[in-house]
Image 1 (cartoon, rainbow, N blue to C red):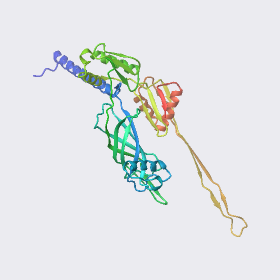
Image 2: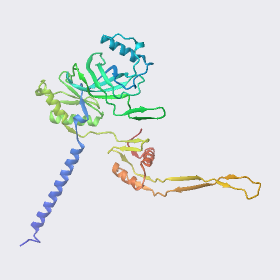
Image 3: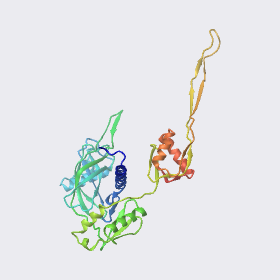
Length: 381
């Protein structure tokens, strides 16, 4: 027999429902905070762990008549020098090929690259070559800012496009004077990288912010007490504990730092690109109470000239009589009030009620900022 009016059963059901609601609320809060938190490795890097830039210059051969012209003497001189190394004596005047182009090579070599590692290469024309399509890069040494050679590059080019032209028409897809070689360079010399300076290392925020730096310090000190302190809005200095100061444990310590989750903070900003009508607003954007009314005024002017013909057997002349039609359309818009402290989603919802376009939103945000009601940095690109 079921108990319908028992007080104990009612309390049990009430507590059970309340408990389920509490679990749902705690779970939603947890997932919301977990979603907002990011890893340290995604917003910061360890000082000393960085890429280095290499460059070189050489010839590209195998072009189908789209190479440098004879006016560009650098290409001919480089070709003569290469042939001399191969034991072939030739003068600049005898070199008349248009299948060769002089190029610059640029490469980024990551930290901790070892000899034998392969790198991607970007090749760019120096002279007046029309296209590098079908070309092959000759072997060249790639050097750094210290003039030391760290890699060599060679291989066939990939331009991902074309450039063809005739006497009356031409067609082009992408830029054909810049090419790419996947794994086209081989590391020959290691660039020594050091991230441990004495007994400490530094973590650099990619987007400096005092609040984010302080949160990183708190997260580090919760995991390893009294190990971290912030120098400024970008740099956090960390002294590894005694258990992590050896060479075989420091990598594990840095990995533990990178896997920490913190919630980064940022300045409230609205980015506007007037050329494309793009608007990007951060979640911290707030607006004070403001009333907005936005209407469009359209004026259409149409010219429809008419031809006036003279009557039969008259001495008149045919004349063009101007006829102008002017139409003015002004939309009626109500005054909408946006309350203070709303989030950017509330602002977007309220402005959508007005039926505004992205172009109109740009003008509205500028007007709100000028009125002093927009509490965010407005950046116009």
